[in-house]
Amino acid sequence: MIVPGSPEMISQLEAVFDLEPSAAMFKATAKQYARTDRVIPESEWMKRAPYVRAINMLKKEKDAVILAHNYMTPDIFHGVADIVGDSLQLAIEATRVKQSTIIQGGVHFMAETSKILSPEKTVIIPDSRAGCSLAESITAADIAKMRAKYPGAAVVSYVNTTAEVKAASDICCTSSNAVDIINAQEGDLVIMTPDGHLAQNVAKQTDKKIVYWEGACEVHIEFKADELREYRKYEPDAVIIAHPECPTDVVDEADFSGSTAGMINYVRENKPEKVLLITECSMGSNIADEVPEVNFLGPCNLCPHMQRITLEKILWSLHTGNEEVIVEEALAAKARLAVQRMIDLK
Ligand code: 13P
Ligand code: SF4
Image (cartoon, rainbow, N blue to C red; front, side, top):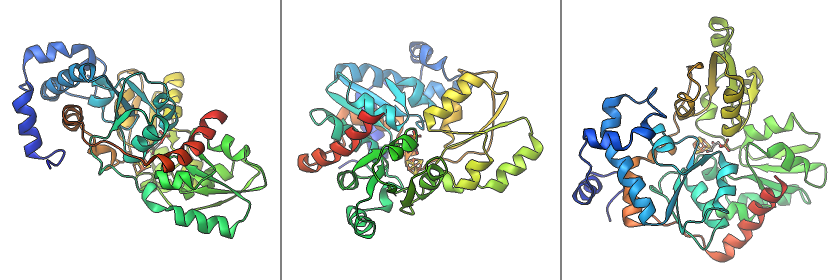
């Protein structure tokens, strides 16, 4: 089997598609390039244009839709994605799309969520190795242990979990609706998994008592409150926006905290002259063209899992149908209950 991203994959693609950079290819993708020319140099787009063109032609032929998370790189986000959004928006869109195939621009738990919500569709992830430190931090057996320790407490699990963990939970949440979901649970005590930092940030905004699993996002725990204080010293007018997967002292230092869509909307609506997006690096690049008056200052960290998804692998997945995401139906039905309860409460 050919490994996604390998030289064999590229040579097989080159044998089937016209992937030679040319002025004609550049012109054919000018509309997409105009949305990202502030962050991708022309010489670089020249190489990506043939892939953008091939993907956009092939997805129509294959009746496929590309759902892309806000952390996808700008060539994917602006070049080939049909629908972009945060985890909640993508989950909702997965229930609405008309096409028979979903190509998931994102990590494995996102593709699994799409499959759980749209079992009749073919869901494909361009690289199944695109994992998530949060999803890998907890199992269904861990949920059972927490239930035994805190009998009667509802289990709210972040969508950044496997289908098994969703199936063992009462309801899911995302970073955009976590406070509302926690508040909607019966009883004073709620179990929240697997992100300990998100749980502690939510705990500050609710009267419920939250007990949590100590998982962490490997990207957001790298941000330090000291680092933000240093930036404030040198850039006192800069607005700091942090994702709630960051540690509480980092979020406390920020002027605003929200999901990836919440962060984008804040920048769109407020157009701060200088901004620090304390999250994955691709976010700033994806909105740079839309808000040319905003200067994006550092720091940012890359998610190695999100970065596994590339234009080349998307073309390969459309061409070969690999790798299809399968969730056994009995498990999917249980997991669907937890995700659907979240969507219904939105
Ligand atoms: P949201 O898009 O829901 O804010 O999620 C962030 C994230 O880390 C997804 O992997
Ligand atoms: Fe997981 Fe963090 Fe990467 Fe999102 S950014 S996929 S939470 S490791």
